[in-house]
Image 1: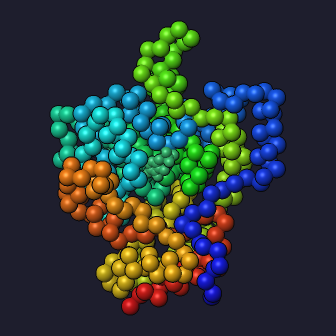
Image 2: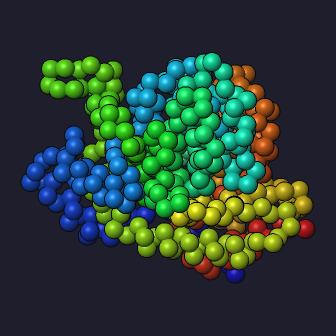
Image 3: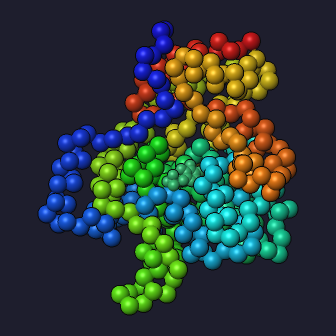
Length: 371
Ligand SMILES: *Cc1c(COP(=O)(O)O)cnc(C)c1O
């Protein structure tokens, strides 16, 4: 097969049909209510409570502000046990709250935090565990929550990759004290930019509501040092429109993932993502780890794909513990599995609109590097 003339990007944002979106925004020209908990905001919130199978959903302007403000609302102190194998947002949110991230290594099968190593990292300053459901792989929830209970720690999940997933039939956002979701344009479900915190704790929900609105309790009482994290009406309408097509999109992603698996499983030196039982997946990412036995290394495959107009992503690379802004502050070699995976992983292009023929083509190009 010939190379595609248009670049094949690692992801492609989902957009509803143009007319559908325009119909939905038209009433804003009568109501002139553009933000601050408008009708569409409230409708999206209610629909997400049902779709995500959680008691409370607090919507935010983006996922990162949801995470930062949730850390603030939980009143965490001192040290937070987390993973360096994540998007920079997770680590920045901890540090911007004046806390110290303590990095736990990852599990070799699913790339989430290795729950068996958490207890060794607990000190008298530890206040919480902040794990990430990496690539939509669900963390070892039972173990994490057992450790948290034993040591009286809070648990806040970065669930940015797991929108719409369930674990043992329960909404993935119903575990721990709270979970953060991202509705960024590149995620499975988008509101252009956007995010949410889910929780079962009504008090936390109400506190988040105030904190994302400058800490305003009522017109004359401002009793929290908040920020502006509110989702606006255009974002909410994009969400409502995209939500209508989401099941269809996830099904298309499933077919893409199956096709990748057909082409790539059983190839020596190629490690594919784990398939987790008890998880209803959203097929958010397709990570591949290149072991020595493959032949070419990750960087060589990345460059060769690029020459064929195919753009994969070194995700996650570098580890957040080795970013330039933290130079000399952390020891990436203390999480050797995470370090090794970051040097070997590529996430391959995936979206609802990627054709199966192109998936075959991408795999052919990858396999040219196999010895
Ligand atoms: C996308 C993402 C975020 C940040 O969400 P934004 O909506 O982009 O602010 C945080 N953590 C992880 C793991 C992500 O993938």
